[in-house]
Length: 260
Image 1 (cartoon, rainbow, N blue to C red):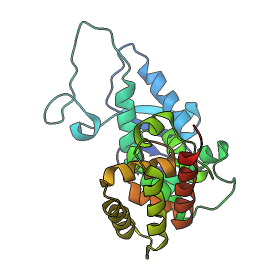
Image 2 (cartoon, one colour):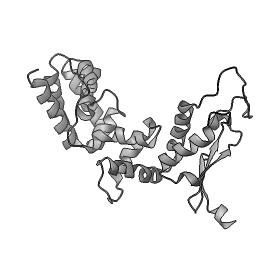
Image 3 (tube, helix red, strand yellow):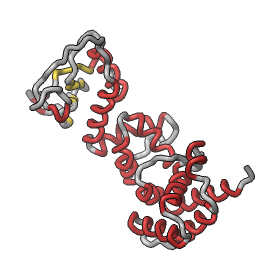
Image 4 (cartoon, rainbow, N blue to C red):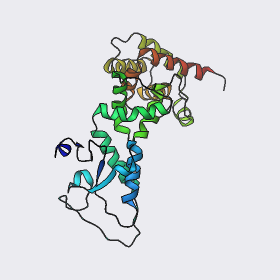
């Protein structure tokens, strides 16, 4: 009874017992597609757990969380003429829901070993506020723990490389290097370096340069992440900090001025 009382249950997604046993709540029935084997394997890999300690349990009748087909949350099964298919998209969605509900420190502790393995974070380093803020910033876009590694990379390396699509899409604005240089000067003067003031500086720079804000925002995103997509730009700039943001913008100016 005591062991059951101390079992951790994370918002009805799974349960972790003190002995390390993991119980996954699933809405999917085994119809010959091997889900009762595949799902524990995937979960064990994601959670770095022993497969033998992962078991499945039929989930409660909760349509909003588990996606049962019948209105009102009842369990239902549709019989069709097609073969059963293991729905990886559904599993990713469920995993994303689980990630969204994990306590931040628990989520960070799960992600850090993956960052260490990729050489992006020093082994044995204590969690700090900056890393917690980074994981929280990346959380909404993550469906798997491994997603954090790719998304965190621009924040954890010294020099970013620009994706070809980012170059051809967002770095073709006329006089872009002059616009970026003007933004660098504006960001040097921003006090405090927080989201509202950084956003105001970016938009005011675009207005002064007589261009729309969007091209400058997109180019700045490429400068600091190397990519066409990221979390909210102003959150990204603040998390990177003034010095790293300016250094990356200056790197972009050098790139734009280099012979093609």
